[in-house]
Image 1: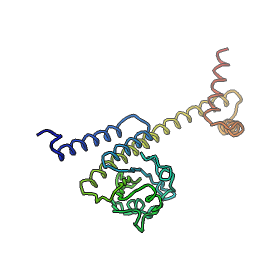
Image 2: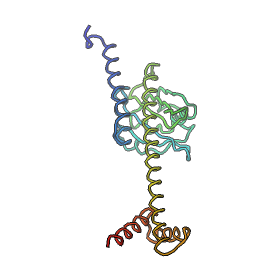
Image 3: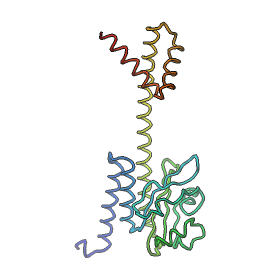
Image 4: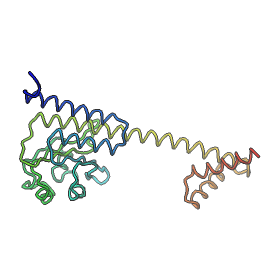
Length: 240
């Protein structure tokens, strides 16, 4: 039977195609902001959502901040952060499981009913984003009409949320690796610059470092920049 004459088969194939696109987005070499925007856009299409948003947890402040949404609504995009345990998304993070609400405009726990009414938002599902049993954020999907989310929909969204969490964690680990390499290179440069000063001025190691540190503070530049300048100066002097 042709797909177009079989609604269930068509839906399954469509969902599989969208999930594949989400998977490709997660493993792409795009910037994280692009990946997250693509994820919420594809998820909104997959879930037939009016608004889909991805909020990340600020562990220090214990609040959730919107990092990506396909919505053009300024009032939604700029709504204040949500504390863990507050509103629907905050409870999903605190309780570490998905939460659904039939009508957010009438839900006592929902923190922004005015925005919900103004934007015509009805049902909501909030799914925590987990990495190694640790919650890093939440994925939200709003509908424009009352909708009872089926278990299949909850499982699909949980899968998307976990893929998004993986993309974020991988990007964070890569950034930490790059920073570690840069710090190591900076230390090597400073060590070389100290050696130059020690040889040139008969400084001991501590004094050579203090000279580099003082120039860094006075000129408002990094230790690596000052070290680079000393190294370049030495190389130029050696070539003459």
